[in-house]
Image 1 (cartoon, rainbow, N blue to C red):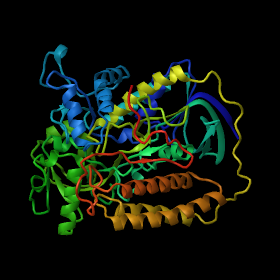
Image 2: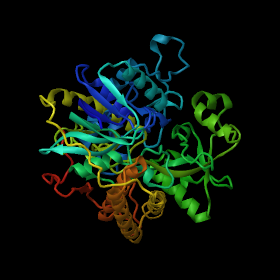
Image 3: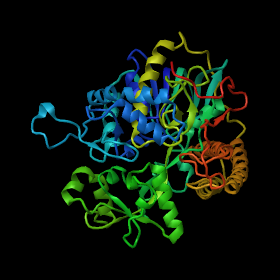
Image 4: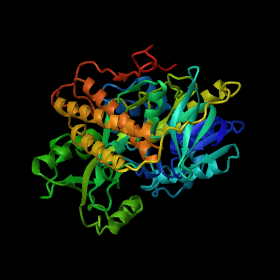
Length: 538
């Protein structure tokens, strides 16, 4: 068994984790963990882009106001302002790392050329910076190249964190499964950052990669951290409906460029639901699609971009065009079959403006965190911006608050009382059962009865998983199921405690929104209860 120490241990290799590693001083030793390879997270899947205030026609105040409106009364204005104000510096930093964003091609004088900005739901002006429809991939490639040049960063792939080690009330390390060897390593650190993404794999249909299993949320909860607003799960309205493309997302920028949603008859239906039509916030569009599918008994609806020329589509949406063409769909002539799918976890671990949690030495950034930016509904393309803003503030805070020395020797992992499983079918069955019940009972539209049933079923599943965990040697699949079952339970508990409809949480038994918005805060047994609200910003 390996026993290693770093100054900082970063769990997760997406935008948040990579940018944190790059912004920490080169004198700090860093261990960067990834469950598989460095491109396995959600960042490289992001098509649309990143919101930023970049020209004189836009303002910080406008971006803030759009975000607050989308968040349905639960955004923390200080968090929103803090994030938006740094958007220009984030763009400058990304360009310095080698990210090539698209520029306008209608300005011959290069000295004054502007970025090509797109429109997305909830925004009042074009402010979405992008690299064609492969923004996440472009960012990932650039940051991966930079990290590989850093001699102070040791990249550890094929690693799954089993649990964090908390000693004397402080985060001091982690037990880490090396999935290539099957051994559990003990890794000590002066500070730990969780940047593991969200938990959309809890749902049967999702746009996320398979690794989005809520690991960081579960790890932080078991370590004693509060979580907030986990009932707000964003469903992307338009994922490709095809048996060979179960997780392929169709970027919202398509609708920003005029794509319309239509029924099989060709009827356009979004104007009946919202005056913003296809550019309404994602929860409204997803709920409208869900309503029409259930009303008419449809398997899908259709996204129509045929008003654009083939050349325009190829220029701005090459990935979408190529993937659809592989499946026999010519999007310049045909409508694209789409369905909603779980896309983003708006709640998460409670943090302050530096990403610091209730447990000293433990930071959480990216989709794993609840910063107060998204409120009850994330506005499109704010998530990448949040990753970079909080990675920067966490790096600054860590640099000045690292303990002088690493904690003493940590206990090694003890697996002397478990055996190799001969009942792996239990894991497979539990995976299917959990994702199906979350889709059926805790989906786009909820009821008290469905949520109660979900709670009952998850309680049984959790006991089965815990029994299995206590009896058999651990695997990646078991750890992910253990984490996701816990996070699903927290999601249901949060949803049952909200007696209203707000943002992404739609409960037909409570169709009205209360006059005052309150955060849903859950506190683990033995965790911090000093504050019932999210931290205020200094």
